[in-house]
Length: 102
Length: 182
Image (cartoon, rainbow over all chains, first blue to last red; front, side):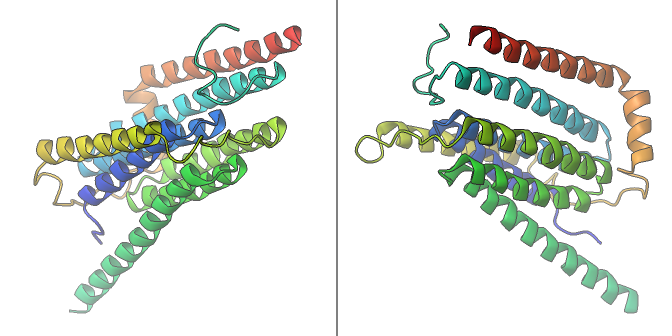
């Protein structure tokens, strides 16, 4: 059973990455920007796993697991920032959060 | 002849599952980006993660598919939903008079990124990605992953745990700082 070749998976990953990048660039709600970032990370994971199978090399799957851990860390810190902003009654609009001064 | 029929039927079945998973993956990705309510975006992300887990199963990466469902749908999305519920409904400030240059710029930049990826991958791997080989039956199983992870890539494993620890400490510091300021 072959199924689709790896090029199909990589093409799908590229499309998903483009959708995620569009969300990061176009949306202004911090939470939705973080969700779109997850889409981009998952597109990278899909390409890694497809190519890992293509070259019979386990390192791709290991790297995908490491990417998952990094995504979890990023959500932990990002959502911590969102909660901190909310406690200070600041806007969650990324256009108004353009400077780092508190 | 019988085995050939079975094999081609299996191939068709894999293609059908792939097409359904790819379609739901792209559709839920578009839904994540386009829903105006972040709660629905987070729910759409669950669909995206589920269809990606099906892709991983097709790619004989069983352990990564299980970890995907557990870590993402189980932990990350639930955390997102809690925070979205905690923050409450917040309207995005409406666009001032139709789509701005920022929207066009964002669409152009994302399209350019997509074209760049396609061109780079296509030129780098032209023809090399078309054939598909078969892998051993233990490829992607938890036992195999455990051996690769804890024997071949032990340093990456330890660095991952340190990254997670630092992120957890950072999350705690961010939360406690906000409490003192309030």
